[in-house]
Image: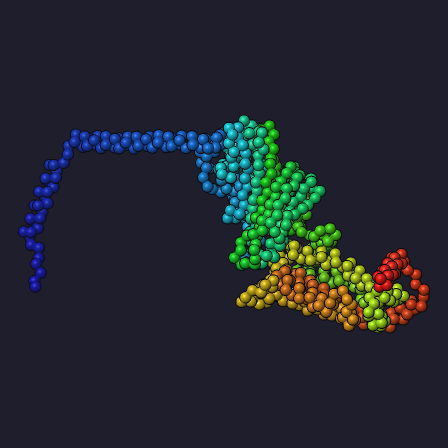
Length: 622
């Protein structure tokens, strides 16, 4: 098909049409007067729209003002003078962060209280940061009366926050007016777990009811941090110092408990290796304390250990309140707690009571701290165990010597048992006569063992509470403050658990060998009526170790394993290289030939036995 081309006539036509359109547009353009009139009309319309906007804004402002007035009236009706605080911009949920290099706090506008306390350098067994306060686990509240007969709670009202001091000082003010307020002042020092906490009021002497004390109430639920919640809960306990610092006491660790105490200087909500402590500048006159056990059984899903509570009254002075307190949120570490001089916060650590606690605090804790400063933590336990056993080796020698003497006398004792098997009184008299002649006391083997008990108990309390062991690994144990695991069981055994720990097994084997060495010879003797079955006891002790220590700190089981192993070697050395039974027998025979003078106790025992025998004969004649 031939393409159609644009000819000359078409071009002329388009040009004429365009010229006509331009001519028409030119002749129809508005005049200067019409342009000015149109601009004036647009300006009038713009002014009208702006006036309408201003009028709407005025209406909205007036409505908002009416709403605020109504709200302020409602707040005043409910909160009295403190209704003013509810109208401030801070009267909404919000938090202020206060932190340093070791601790992180969140303080809420509502209640002015700490709603989150996180320790930066520590983690739980499952690698979660250690929180002492979180998810509503704590509450701090002041209840006070006002002059217009209202009772108010600070936890329900909003405080106005203000940071200063390079972000290390936080003022939380509950205001009754711009110049009247109740203030919580938090001050955090660098690299410190202690927070200075001041409660004071300004200009409230006509607002507060001076006849009614301010009631302080502090509650906290212990957050789980350890692998075994039952083991952690065993060392989670409310501890407090009272009577102007002269006494330390505790609520029950294994059940619900409560107490009322006077002149309390500090109280500690201990969560095993971490503590939340409230310290007073001057003793609280009277404090009601409660502790509720929240752990029913070993459960991997359990979150809380104990629910603590403390309540006390704060007296007003001149209608105002002014108290200087301190919070400690940090590790239950003797090195850190003892650094706060004059407070005795390290007494909140369960070292044990009496002489046991003294040995633990002043001997084993410093010794282990020194050893672990240059040795691996597990090796430090072994070295400390060796030192303890060497220190107690003279006592072990005395005990074994007594057993050797009893072994030498065994044939004579057997003859007496056979001769007087039907007369217990004569058998006892004849046995005591042999002991007296030989210069041997059946109790001489028990006394050395009793002397070791304070050491054993102190160490029993040391390992579960030594913060230095927390999350420190050794061999197959990943945490010496918790149990070691070599196998997970698909089921749970009562008292034993759902895992197998190797250190308790090794310790049980060592104890069994030790018991066989020390009691085996006694079991060969005829079992006397009324005496415990030694064979049963020999197997009972290792069984207890195997079952109950399966959930204890692996560091404690390591100690018992090494301790009994060393004791076995010491006793073998004493038996084969130090004690000669033939010489002992010769010495006993020499003593038998010499006249034996009885001391007052022996004479008294002899008289009592003779008197009992005489009474028995008299009854027989009747």
